[in-house]
Image 1 (tube, helix red, strand yellow):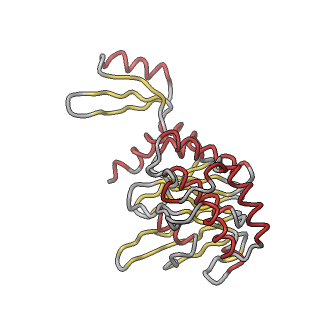
Image 2 (cartoon, rainbow, N blue to C red):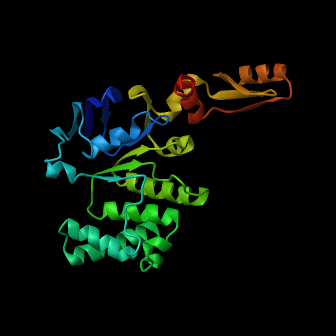
Length: 277
């Protein structure tokens, strides 16, 4: 279990994360959502100890996480937005190098590499150099590299950024498999459909402040499960309804430049954060 208590990070006069309180249960898949500059990456960086908090603390299974707590740090692994692998290495070499950093025996590195490549669908590409991999394959390799040391917690900072739709769906399936093995996953993403499809709960953050924390279904239900989009010459506006018949009745009054659809997590995001930008 991860406990975040009054977590705050300031850069001079700017407060990036403002007294964040959050509990993440073991085996949970949590989405950390917010507009650019909301404090998502800063929070992930503090959870990985890359950044130190100005105030507050993070507890892993009841023990305070610090840069010196090597036992606690081994429980988690972070995958950043940037590719952090040597371009001239083949995939097997990337895995071997990671294993040696953690003093794993060669036999263990080889066995885990074989299993992870099979798990991620990368076996046939294991001799390919990193520079010749697609963006989606590089992301998968970064996840395999992280899993080599068998962490309990995976921190993902926009893991599908720049992927095409097929690669993104393949990544979703991979993450579902990991979470199905009771791995705790914390995900930041700008793709609202990704958070809605994967996360058991989502935390909406804006300007460093936690605004909402709930399941996607409950947040959508609060706003209204039915949406009517109205289009005019210059803009699109949306009204939300809890009752389908009420939405249809409204739709019948506004004419042909309107449509009825199901409300999504993106609508919740826009209503919660977008109007404050």
